[in-house]
Length: 330
Image (tube, rainbow, N blue to C red; front, side):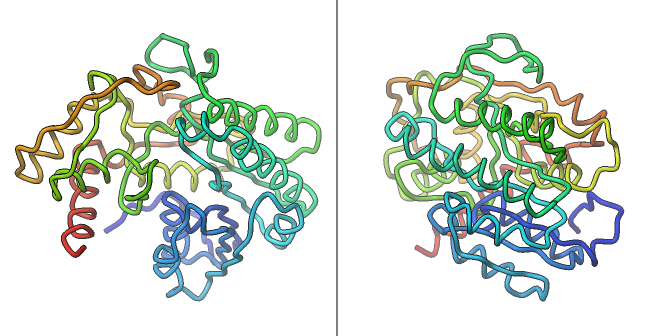
């Protein structure tokens, strides 16, 4: 049985999830619909989202879908109409791709973000939560990462997320909308994009091991990450949207487990689960990548009541099983 992260009756509540056909957004929309939300509207242009994720949601009476782009201010206004809560997950998310396409990332991640904030204000939506990123910590070397201590951005992607946080603070101060931001630390789980040049690392590892295709590890593989199962991202979004704690609002939180594992640890765990001896190929480190990442999650625990429900190992087993099934049929 899935854990419950709220105590309120959701039957009269209306939620907008941007990017709701994507990885995190679809899990969040599914949680709300499963738990009786009156209306869950998804806005997605299906560039990074998938129709297969929407099919999971279409079984619920409270589900609505708008196919549209957050770069259109008119579309954002329409999507926000009648909503009480917004969870803004729509974004472009790859560091190397942002280095190749900085203008595109700015249009979507900054321009689209401001469109959504303005549409929320114009529709008098009281609560706006959004996805930021651990990439905003940049070259700040200290561990664990504390929300008040950030460094110099190392990629256009990181710059867009830092800019989102600035705009959220300005809109809160100037227009009075209540915002809550989440710095995601390497969220993983079922439904992550398994294909394409910028596919997530776990699906790539599983696919490569199963099909014995080259699997690449950037650098020496000893770089560490606070790998965080998607259920924990769903939890914090739900808590951020529904919290009655006024002290919790207009802040940004780390969303993680508070434990770090190396990429080599991750690859060995994938091999072990799949019963394989297939070795990875090491190559040059990627420009813009942070070397080590570990979160302090005490702020989210204290103010939002966040408590990770699934640790790395359990989440990894569930994720590998999902992709194992996906690839065994292809």
